[in-house]
Structure formats: C-alpha cells, structure tokens
Length: 400
Ligand code: FEO
Image (tube, rainbow, N blue to C red; front, side):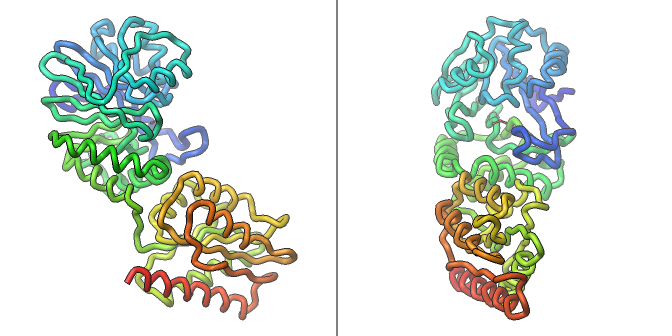
C-alpha cells in the first residue's frame, strides 16, 4: 500500500492493524498503529524514515514498486528507534552507499542498533538539504522523545515531518485527521503524550515555541505514527502546548488494588464523599490489577489529584500498586495533588509507604491519608466518605 499525500510526495509506510503492545509489553495499542515513511521526489529523491524490522521485506518490496531503489539519493532518519529504523539494514544491503542524514546522537544510536558504518551525514538545526526545487530543513528535537530525535521541514510544500511528535498509535485506512473519528484520534494522541512525552514537557514546550517562532507556514504535519494532520494542522501543536504546561482537567482518579474488598469499599466511599462535596468533578475509579496500565496513566495525566490505595501486605503494598507508582514516578508529573488510603489487619504500613512514594514522585500530599483496620464497618466506611468529602471540598475551593 502507498498513497500520494501531495504531488511527488508519497506515504510508503506500513499500517499495523494487529499491534496490541508496543515497546515490548509496555504500551497498549488498542487501535493498532502505523509506521509512516515518506518518499519525496524532486531533482533529488529522499526517503524519510522506514518501518519496524518485522515489516522490512514488505516495505522494501513496496518501495521498489514506487521507485527504483538506486534512484533514492538520500535517506533521512529522524529517529533511530527500531520502529522507524528497522528496515534500514534490508534497504542498505541494496543501496549501501546512500547517505543517511541524522543527528550526531542518531549516528551513535543507529550504530549501536545495527553495527554498520553506513554513510552517515550529521545534521544540526538549520541545516538545509536541497532537493532541487525545494529543500528539507532540519530541526533537532532532542528528548522528543529520544536524544537523537529530529524533525524536518519541507519548503514550498510546507510540510513538517515530526516523527514521534504529534503521532498516535492509531491504525486507520483513512490516514488523515479530518477523516477519522475525532474522539478516537484525540484519545490516542493524549495517551501517546501522557505515556511517552510527559517527562519531556519542558523540552516539548520550548521546541514547539522555537518552531512556531520561525513563523513558517505549516500546511501539513506528517508524524511517523498514526494519521497525518492536514486539516488545521496546528490544532495538535496547540494541544501539545496545553499538555506540556501542567495540563489538568476537573478530574480526580482513584487508583487502588484490593485483597478482600476492604480497600475497594474504601475507594467507593471516598468517591461518594468527593461527589457529595463537588458534583462537577469527574471521579474515576481504577482497580489497577484489572485495568490497562497505559489507560490509567492517561487518566492520571488528566487528573488534578490522584488517590492511591492498597491494603498492607508484608509491611508494604500490593505489587500492582507498586508498579503503577513506579511508572508515575518516572513520568515526573507536576502540579498534581495526591493522598493515600488502604485497610490493614496487622501492621498497617501501606498508607505511609504510598504517601512517601507519591511525595518522592513530585505529588503534593493533601493529607496523611486514611486507613481502616480489618474490613471497614459502617463507621469505617463513613470515615472514608468524610475523607473524600474533605478532599472534594479542598480541591473545589482551590479551583475557585
Ligand atoms: Fe516511534 Fe520513539 O519511536
């Protein structure tokens, strides 16, 4: 499959409808993904990025139908991660002298992956590669999301090739933002940002503003995953600016696991209390052992506060809760509030353990948390409802 996105510019990538996990088993991809590769034909022909290695045979075969491989003058590797560089070994076996344009970190990473001395051409921000009637201008995009990442901008056609930036793990035969379900598209875009880009929000904000300050027209943004932004392409740029700047919605996420339903009953009582205090706030409950981790992280990203609960086990917390706290710590969320809860039978450390993890993860603790001994009775449940009510009121008054 290939299609023309503009005269002399073709998409030559791969739509991966089957993908359900990405980065090993780390990232859920409920709607598949695509690995977008682009072929630009001018006096010189350039290929931007490739596809994941498992599709390299199919990719090269399709590419051959588009162009005789010897006629590819340049390859641009915007990012060295295997989902974009995976077909390079197969392609370079056939056209070994073709120059590969990438950042200095891109060279290190590609050499580290494939152990080949290909004909690398190192670029820096502002460098220009003339294709004849138009040119590619390179923009280093360090930490968006790897040290080697870069964008490139095609003059005359005004297209930004943004690699992972502005991408979504979203398979679609339509391939354009205006042709797909908007709720699905933005769900996948925010999930991508929350799970991949959150730790690099400062760099994202700075880079986007740097690109906007160039004041160049952008008619299309072509990422390397998901659909192409052709209708109002800057809408996703504006979303990224919002997401990069301590984004919150009027939402509280309650994240817990439970052994004998005590902590679950506390979670539900806390939710009731919050809703009694503030009918406008969205309260969402997730038993982490039954929920998709990346979906939960997306909801944490959207929340102004999270309440995390676990019963005490072996003087600590359940491994499912420990796992999500580990993820959350690495993502470096900012300007979010939190509190802990949980029930216990003997020693009762869980609330303290969770509170400490939340604090070291950069959350502002709302209080010391709440815990109940054994399976909470009516008084214990009311205590959790009161805890929820107090948090609901506090967060409501903070917002007013
Ligand atoms: Fe789509 Fe960072 O690879």
